[in-house]
Image 1 (cartoon, rainbow, N blue to C red):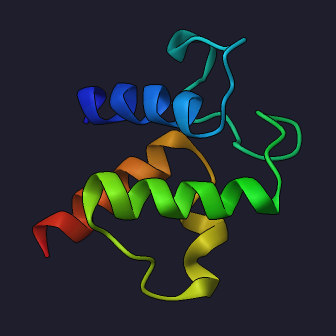
Image 2 (cartoon, rainbow, N blue to C red; image 1 turned 180 degrees about the vertical axis):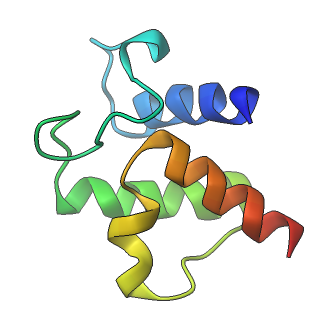
Length: 85
């Protein structure tokens, strides 16, 4: 799980063009939105593309989005749960 979370941090930085950040700057449980990284709804679309292209996982239901994209840890948990399924 730690490797997956670190990989996700690198991929988020690349996908969202956040060159001023390093993976270590993003906490595993830090909010990806608002007071955390400050991502917005356009960034969510990029995260969905990231999950589809890197992990071949689609969001089952749109209403799951806020829970799945809450933090790097919640993304990693969703990927792990859905790759095993």
